Image 1 (cartoon, helix red, strand yellow):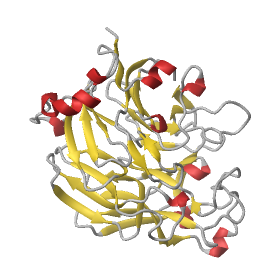
Image 2: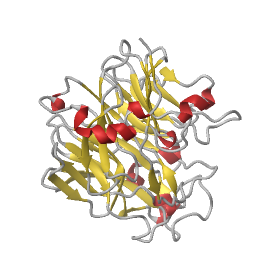
Image 3: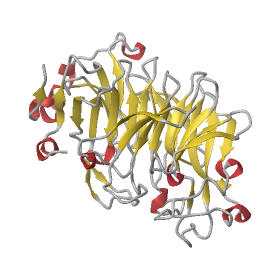
Image 4: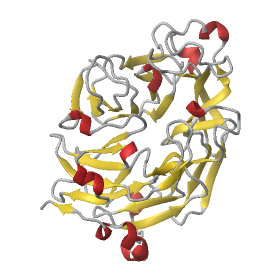
Length: 394
């Protein structure tokens, strides 16, 4: 990223003829306000939430916002910094921010959730039910020796609850992963967390797609049996996030590139892989590749016009690229908040965000809504595009 682009905020580039025009949800970490902005960067709506995101929110077709909220830090249950990003409260609010539904996770909800078509909600947890039994833990390869949490490995759990909050399905990682195959990275992975699931996605056939950061693997879980029916990634991707199934059957992945194998520069990219062949059918990376990099978090979303919306988390940057890799929209988060996370940051002002989401002007959840930026005139004067320089490509 150039010095020029680092110094600018809000919308810094916009090509109306090539971008997928609509509204983008921006929710910076440590912030209680989730914002909806138009393509020019003007704020058109705000949800004032009861807490900070754990780690993002999604606009539903009914116009409600479903999110995960941080209600405790890793310090409260006696965990350490690698267990940051705890949530605890799954919350749905209406357009005005009034609570419609909530589910308090019995343990430590973390990283990601997914609202399913049937109204159920998938989410990831670290909890005592998922603790890896000693006989399995000793077989598990990789990671830094002696870095278990008080001698114990915490295994991820994926849970599904219905609208009544009743658990209807769960998946314990240690029961279904193979300690000979699903091994931890050898460079710097703590053996306290296994395998560090950071995204969950419900596929149309009912199977579950997950991303496992500490094993450099994206996998598909057979919903009926819990078995891992497909896995891909080691040697191809590194510490990835945000795996999702595309309409063409391929899988889109944010490849962070942290601790990438082999000698060379560190960079991030987005890849589209064919699960039938394991072949990467499309990728986006910067030129030079090192201009695009976030060691943690990160998101990618295929838009209806074939473009891809990408979140470069640690730079607070959201940008849209065409299939040919041309950047046609770019937004630098202008909201800075004091970060207290103990995992990667130690008390500093941050504009990071986990993921951004784009909704077309015809999206069902936006119909009949007042999206006039004049409602937020004072906020736009400070954080909108007029407060910063911008480049518009005609």
